Structures are given as C-alpha cells and as structure tokens.
Image 1 (cartoon, rainbow, N blue to C red):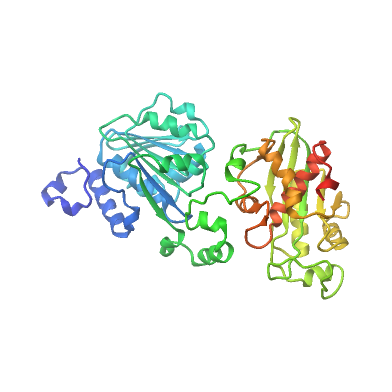
Image 2: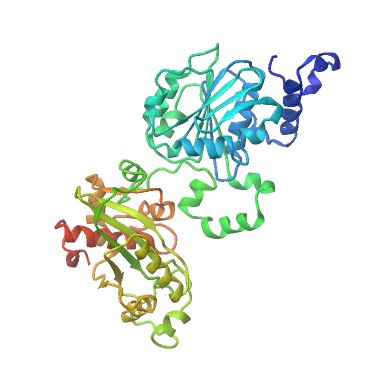
Length: 451
C-alpha cells in the first residue's frame, strides 16, 4: 500500500480491495486533513529532519503522532522509534495521551500494545518502540526507518540524539520528526543547523479553536510580554540576555531529576512582595493603611512572594529543590511557606525583612509560632547579592532538581547592570537568600557580606 493523501484518490474498486484496517486508516487520515492547519502537515521532500518548534498547546504531540501513524500504516513492516525525555513521557504522552498514537490510530489498526516494555505493533507488522532520552545506550543496536523525537529541548542527555541518528539506517529515506518547545540549548541549535532540515514554527494562539478560553486568557495575563512567554507561547528561540549573571546553558549543565537521598541542611527562603500593586517596590518610608498584619493585608499585590527551597548535600554541592512562589494574601503565603517547610523537613526559614519589617516574621508565626526563622536585611543591591551565588553556578556547584521555568526566567534576566525582566525578581531573590544562607554556613561566603 503506497502513501495516499485521501480515499478520494482511490477508485471505488481499489478502495474495496483494501483490508478493513487500511480502509479505516485512510478514512481517519482524511478527517485529519480536513482539520489540520497547513503547517501541521508533514512537508514533502527528502529532508533528514523536520523540526517543529512551537509553543505550548500548538499541537506538537498531535503532529508527531499523525506523522508516524501515517508512515506506519502506509508502509508495512517498518520500525519506528519514539523518544521522549523519559520513558513515562513517551508512554503517557506520545502513546496514551489525548493526542497520542492510541488516540490517532483506529482501533482496528492496532494489533498489540505492551505498555510495560513500550512496544506498539500494527496490523501490517509495523512496530513502534519507546525510548527514554535518559538512556542513550539503549539506542545502541536497534535500527529504524523513522523516528519521532518529542520535547527534545528537555532531553537530559544530548548524546541520545546522536545515538538515535545512528539508528536511522533502514529504507531509502530515513527521517526524524522532532517536536519541541524551543530552548536556546546547544542541541536544539545544532539540530536547527542540520543541512536540509525543515523547520516549522508556530505559537500557542494559532490553535485557539482547540484550547480553553480561560486557559488562553491566563496565558496572556500571566506571560504576555515576558521572556518566558516569548519562549513557551510564541516559540521564539531566545538567546541569552547580554550580561546575564545566569544563562540557560549554565543551569542546564548541572540539572538533575531528583536530589540526593540525604541532604545535610535544607532552608526555605522567603522574599515577601514589597509592591504597591503597580509592580514597583514600595520604599521603606511608604505609608500604608492600617498597621501590623492589617497593613500587609491592605497593601495591593503586584509581584509574587518568592518561596524557594534549597539544600546542601554531603558532597558539598547545593540543590534547588522547589519554587513554591505564589501571589496570595499574607495568611495564604504563610501557609504555603509552612507547607514547603514541612514537605522538605527543612532546618529553618530565611526571610527578608526589608519590606514589612517585623510584620513578615509575625505573618509567618501565624502559620506556626514555633517556626525557626532567620530574618535577614538586604543592605546591598540585588546584583551585589546575586553575583557570589551566580559564581557557584559557574563553578558547577549548584543543581536544579527539576525545571523551574518562572524562577529560571528571572535568573536569566538578572544582569550586572540590574534586572531587565518584568516586575520584580522575587523568585530569584528568594533563591539568592537560600543559597547565600547555605553557602555561608558551608564557609563559602559570609551572609553579612551578601546582605
């Protein structure tokens, strides 16, 4: 059976001669062709790579699934690799997700699906095999006609791409479809520069018809005009901010999936929002309505309250564990701090006193009067406090245990001349306080100097 775009290209006589699975596939394929946008369709030609760089919700998973489903149904007995950041991602999103292969393929086309070993077989002998980007060695040996590489920007080991490329050696024109939200990491840049590569770009709002209105409204309200929004929604391949204290590559270089099982110390740092509701910091002499806790309740909220958990390992390295930052009432963020503190069984809380003074400690003690709290005062500017912490990253001494997009966006917008992002970098400030406290206890820096 050769590749056909619609059943109408077949004569009624030939269509009747097809097997039931073949007819079911062509009818399903015709439905997709009526609703797909032109940039969601596999481009013609003998390209080696089709790189779909698109925002969240653009339809990347559907595009990848439709491509390899079409190839698999229309070419009997082929071998197709499906690679995602983790095995669970490949199984739960690429195969079993709302837009995955099981949703795209007619049931009559599926012969077997073994979720434990990650193997899907079709009626015509085509086989899909799942791989985790965490284990490039698993790709030594297999060979494939085609591959779907999903969320490549989030792959923890770039060697996986090289090993996958070596497996594409079957048939006359082996190809790989790579679907990902763009990040300016070396692997994505390298893939984009591959001779002959086809590149499709798309933003979240191009798929507005298929996304919830309240979700789109939230995206616009929360991320419009931000660096993170430009990357995650508009799929811009952003280069590093000139003069930034942190870069995406610097953070990615030591990123981990989980922290060590034992940490010597864990702290929760809190940077309370000192805004007047317009995104600007209030001065120490600003007059507030009311006094004490009532003053904090009455003050308009603009920026988030930065809440970051970090720990020091027995290996002398530092681990960023959680970004629990929020935009809540004083009682709300105090409960959030307590929740993060208890979840990580932390040793103490470090909180900035500049905006709110003693009231910040009072708010925290409304959640638990026995909390071990260390209040710190910022006597120097943000950049002066951040530079020694950024140096720890340059030395490879800090690992992010997971991805903290909002926090990392603020970090990469902090330059030697100041912060160039939206609002105030409360998350980054909290990170600096947490790592400053841990590193000063470890003998790296004196926190009084950092303050």
